Image (cartoon, rainbow, N blue to C red; front, side):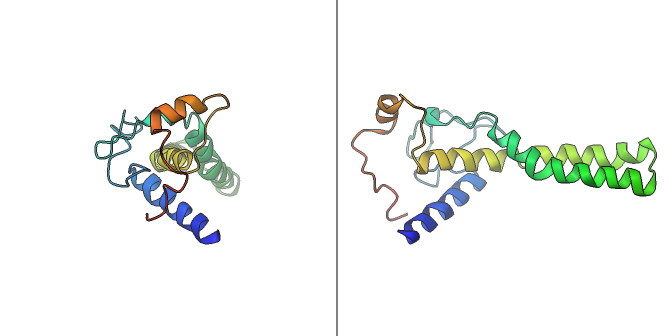
Length: 143
């Protein structure tokens, strides 16, 4: 059982961080920088199941912005930096640090939703229509 969980985790990271279809691992997940495509151009998986919502922004802020704020505060307190130093260092560092990880985090969340068959309560029928009710629960074997 542990091996399957490890394989799922590696598959989620592989597809999510590279922006690949979580079913086939070949098609594109994104149609532009942060916009999820309508469906996979290789296997035809309909991406309407994906709803990462504010998750990517939350993780980006928690993982990147929170630690960087401490760096900025330290820079100000320890060195008494003028405002222009923050304009040249702190603002770009925090802005880029929060914006750049958004796409891989969003891909990771969408891949996680697909692999773990995450769904909102009461949407089981829609899930079955989107992904075919005949798919076995062991779709992941062989990946």
